[in-house]
Image 1 (tube, helix red, strand yellow):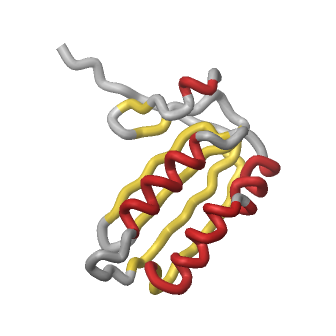
Image 2 (cartoon, one colour; image 1 turned 45 degrees about the horizontal axis):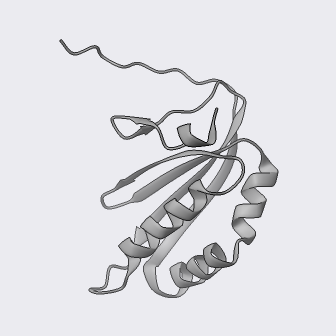
Length: 120
């Protein structure tokens, strides 16, 4: 996968290579406050993550529970992203301002299937 293909999506779904690769699943319950800059920071983190070596794509959904899944080539890339200074500051802000609770899971993707309906 070329670096320019990283954020290619089909109806908002990340286009990932054939497995194996890694997924970071970040589930959250927000403490929403007016003017808290959460959305701006989340967008900035997505843009910054996309520039990191090993990043493959991201999918996100928000309702009562927010879920963001980022995809990576290997665990080393995930670890490097976790240590990024801007990301570390956003993590701090999340714990102190934006989240009532969160769960983070890291998993190796062994199988993946897809479907896209052809529209006339």
